[in-house]
Amino acid sequence: MNTITLTLTLKQIEKLKNTFKDNIVNKEIPYVNLQLKLENCTITVYTTNKVVFQGNDAHIYASAFYDNIFINQAGSDEVGTGDYFGPITVCACIVNEDNYNKIKDLNIQDSKTLTDNFILDIAPTLMELLPYSLLIVDNKKYNQVHSNYNLNKIKALLHNQAYINLNKKEKLPNLLIVDQFTKEHNYFKYLKYEKEIIKNIHFETKAESKYISVACASIIARYAFLKKWEEMENKYNFKFTKGASSKVDNDGVNFIKQFGEEQLKNVAKLHFKNTEKIKSIINQQP
Image (cartoon, rainbow, N blue to C red; front, top):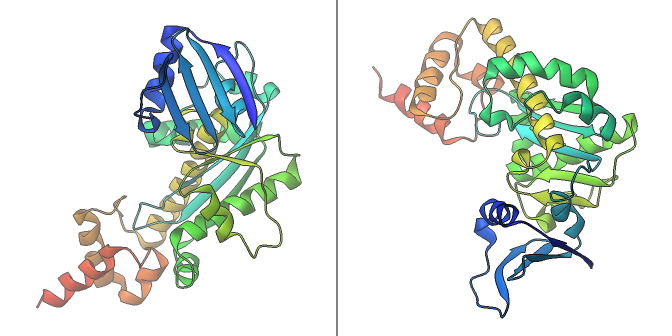
C-alpha cells in the first residue's frame, strides 16, 4: 500500500471535495474534516489541512496536486455506446511531457463538452502529435458480437485491445487510465480468457474531465465516430439523429420504409429498446 502526505490549500481541499463528493464517508473521525473512499485509495483530510492519500493508486490522486509536474500517462475512452445509430469507437493514446507541451494550450476537454465542429478541427492535430490506437466497430459487426457478449464486455475487450495495439507503437507509461464503465474486478473478469491482458490500470469515473490523456482519447474517438457517421449518411443519403430519443424512433421508421428492415442491422444497435418501438410503430400503421 502506498501512502503520500501533502499539505493543501483550502481551495485545493474544496476542489478535492467537489470532485469526489459522491465518495465522501459520512462518519465523524477525530481531527478529520473529510474522508473519501475510492476504489483503490482512501483520502483523509485533517483539520491541519494535511491530506493523506493511502492505497495502490495514492500517487495518481496525489499527482493532481504536485506543482509543475506532469505525469506521463495513457488514457482510453469510448464513444457511440449511447447512440442507437452509428458505430462504437474506442481510442487509447499516450501523453508524455514532450507532446503535452505541444497540446496544453489547445483547450483539451472531455469531448462531450466540445462542439462537433471543434472536434473535427482539433482531432487531426492530436492524431499527428500523439501516439494513439483507434478501434471502430461498425453496426453489423457490433450486432453480431452483442449476440454473445453484453455491452460492458465488448467495451472491456475493446479497451484492452486498444492498449495492446498502442503498446506495439510505443512503450506504455506507468500510468494507464480507463474512464470507468464497470468495476475493476468486472473489467478483468470480462478479459479472463484473453491471451494478452494489459494490467495495472487505474479506473476512474469522469476521467475524461480529470486526465488529459483520456480527454484526448475521447476527442479522437468522437472524431472517428463523426467521420463514420458522415459516411453512413452519404451511403444512404439519409439524415440520422444521434442519441436514442423518440426522434430516433421516427428516423428508424422512415429508414425501414426506404431501405427495408434487413438494412437496419447495418446502421443501428438492434438491442436498444428503440428497435421494439420502431417495429411497433410500423405494425400500427396501415
